[in-house]
Image 1 (cartoon, rainbow, N blue to C red):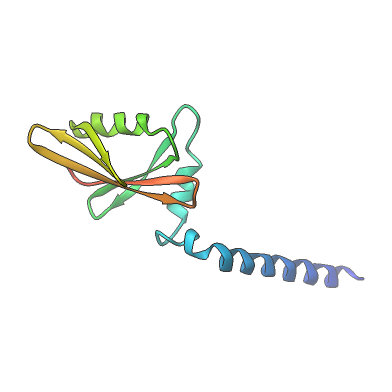
Image 2: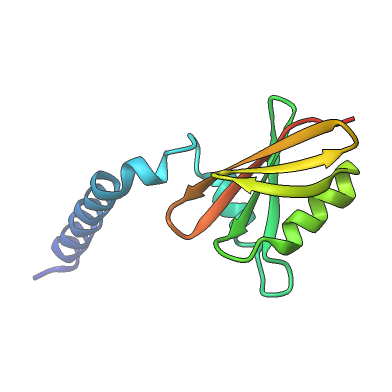
Length: 122
């Protein structure tokens, strides 16, 4: 086999593999639209900081966190908002400040992370 045939074979194999991954995982990859901001933020997650800021969507702050222990992100939301964590209700985390309530919505992302949407607060 000459070099051009090998390059063509490798290119075709990569394209077939890419098509397979997109077909198999497409709904998860694109469940929140463009995956790039989420994946970039996920690369910033470390053992010392198990969450990262993604962006703002429609006035809501969006974070991505490791699945599991969310204590550090809850503490961060409390510090940023002035609200205190009250309770978890399904995929929602309720924070309170006096009579006011703040509901952060969560969604499992790619099975590995959790995306948090925190509404505007005053």
